[in-house]
Image (cartoon, rainbow, N blue to C red; front, side, top):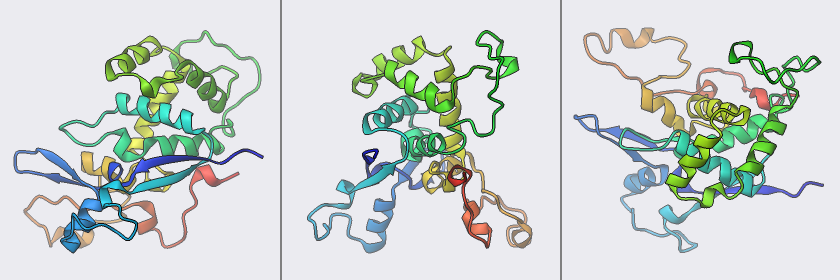
Length: 241
């Protein structure tokens, strides 16, 4: 039986609400910050003696080991870093998205034609034509990045530069972007921080009710996820067989 692995994150490091000033400077209000503001008790401690900022999330991993998850999280944070413009892959929980995808049908190549002939030398226009599944690509690629999360940011960038033409890096970069802007039901885009960043309202079925209400003024609706607009329970593709 496979030993259970968990990803431990600071509760204040993921999700939140983006707050913009008039000059478009952005700050991120975490879920804990919001709760503290609502209760006017930012410094209040809970029964365990830990403040809100010290609380941790223990997330079960479906594919990665703890060390692999730490490596992917660190690499994703360099590919899509947080900066003065807004949050990045770490705040969006991108590593959770990638873990879920690799554990599901996509990770085992459920939807790709996987019979011979295979060809590693074709140009990118033909798409991926090799034999290895996404799971195998990641497992091998992560072996070459062992200890990545312990490196300095400069060393991390240099290491990623050295593999930027590899199949693994291409998959990782694509998955980071997907995890940053996916629907939250897939594990990434926590609190829809990616959608907040670009002003995407989510899969809203209609804005008809807001036309007259906001006529003649800028309208930026609060993002909504698929679970909020679909009446039936939504089962993510990665949980399907």
